[in-house]
Image 1 (cartoon, one colour):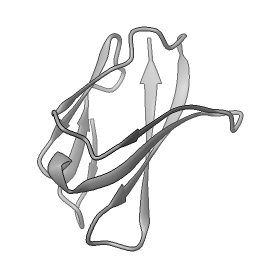
Image 2 (tube, rainbow, N blue to C red):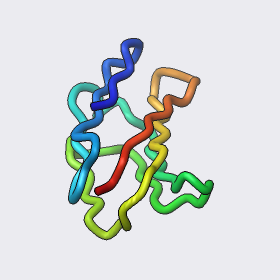
Image 3 (tube, rainbow, N blue to C red):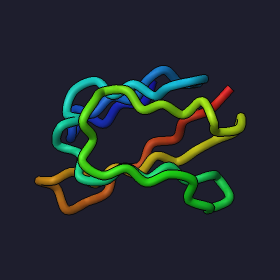
Length: 83
């Protein structure tokens, strides 16, 4: 589980397999970017409409999830593992 105390966004499970769940605050996400550890962006989502992001097509590995909130100018980064 990865949590950010300032934004109250919680991403789980960690490690994940088919989906990443967002508890609290998903409706305030302006942009979510999934990047491989090597730096290649694999997915960009705008205006998240549901608390579940399907990621079954991603290969196993470590990913950085970058979240830009509508009311906050700073990006938040989370490290998640796909099993």
